[in-house]
Image 1 (cartoon, rainbow, N blue to C red):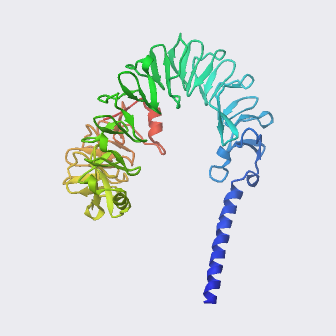
Image 2 (cartoon, one colour):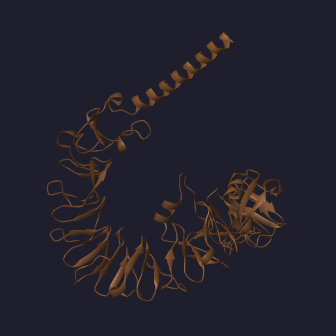
Image 3 (cartoon, helix red, strand yellow):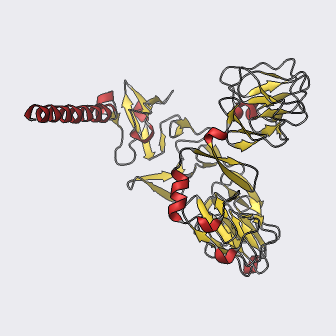
Length: 439
């Protein structure tokens, strides 16, 4: 017994030493002195450093995970830190490590308000010089620097125009006003018009408009979610239950989606995933098929939630079902057959014919077909030509007529001349081509 005790003590000691060693390596590798870097102005920012006779940017001072990125063409002798995310030298102004194109370092200034980062450093979103105004590293085109001022949230103005972020919103002749209870600062009134961020709420009554909570608002005749008018919602009985559910006298809503056959008076919150009323059990806003809500209290839900032999499948926009994993027939790594329905990543592929369903090769199972359709994951690729359809890789495919990025069609792109380039993905596609046509 004594020998066993000694062995246990040794094992614990070795484990503790290993943890200390890993912690030391992480801590040491995350510090500036271990990387030969010297912070430029520790009182304003921990992201800018001198290193190897140059200037480097280290996001969040995280040398270990993110590393130091050289600020190319910077001048170390004149380099000056302005705020947590801003610096300049005699040639350029920088947002993080990016040059703010066209900014004049000699007249560059910070625009309030500042945000406090990590309880210490000031982060500025809006800046300007003698001739231009900037949102982060983007120029606010047309803004008059001499009269420009920040309002609230991402709204700002000069003497003639109203702006949201870097975009011109509308010409103004009246002073903008805040909306009652708008703690997130997403709304603005100007005259008889109400805006949610960049969107004009066309049907809003400005005199009676107020925020209920976060992105929910109301006037004397309607309820709004952001800029969207919620149709068929009773504005007089509408209330927010929690972060996901709302109700009026007629029904429940999950993130503004009406729940079928719901009973608002008997709503019961169970946990962040499950709720119920006297008619249904709900999982993330979908009705759980074949589930009697009377049988499901917190203990039964906990068992259901922790049962690893079960898998939840999304039948459609309104229904979810829980099934035994051994009842599924595997088609591919991400496709399964349950009864006569095909599912991809737990989403039912509506109108898929299970008898003729096949997955294309060399695309990580992202494309499939049956006798009538071609699919990208769980979506039908509208008007795709089955006979000539071929995959390029997991993201791109084509037929004799079009090139596709997943289920979306690239407009005015010739499939005969399209060439995939290594590293090409959605953002570069949307930058290179004018539009992606949605089905």
